[in-house]
Length: 336
Image (tube, rainbow, N blue to C red; front, top):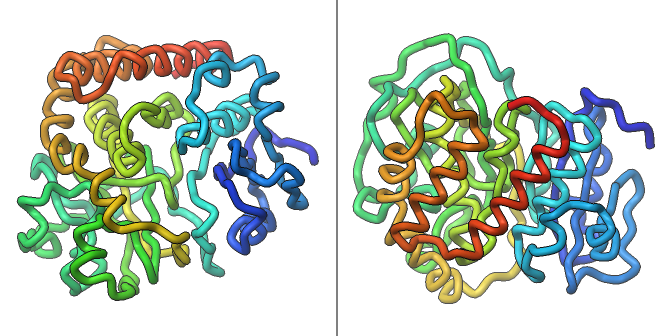
């Protein structure tokens, strides 16, 4: 197909034959789907109107990252981000092969007037603005999961500069293993106007129904040597203090996908989430104290992960992978 620079790109990694979600995303007008394969992906994988990147294509891509990324890991999705950047896109949409787009699937404008949660509140449970159920996002510190944040009463209407939008997911939303082991009931969020977090107010966000604007593409980096259930949450916790530094905010919008979750072992998920429970709060503080406004986003990302390495939240291999990512981004000659 013809790749138009202003087209937004959807990126998914999958080890299954094309799911109904993949087929649905492949039919989205004005958007193009990239699917990244791995060792378990069927050899004859094919879906119409999709750019599919099997391992042999990844290895011949010329990307430094492709040479060192671990196999059988969600972080291989980054090869798809690089391909979208190579195509010249301004917007990258992150989602998964078990998220089915609703008829109204999409995201609000990045700059407009929105309901805004006041700044400098630290962690909040954003789900409380979309549901009356006792439910919380994966990555919210466990000490806060029962707290009533009373967010509605503090909303103010402001002109916002959103850097990342997170769309929610109905039926089986992004929650942690503790929620699933103790409740697990399907959840359908209430519709409301979009909500944006003030600078200094933080919420975990994932890689399931998320859109990044071009200026923040370096922050798409998915940690490759942390546990699977910590990967995208750590990315979001690192990203937010850096976003604040440049005046960007995180926004949340209605559930625009239905997650028909692939089979998971909840106890294995729990074990995979332990580093997330341990480090969520300290990550934000470490990043905020390591970055400086006079540096660009790429350099601040490196400073942030260096601070995490010093505290042994990540390992040395992570810095090697991050360096390759930043070199690949730099080679695309995009000014961030």
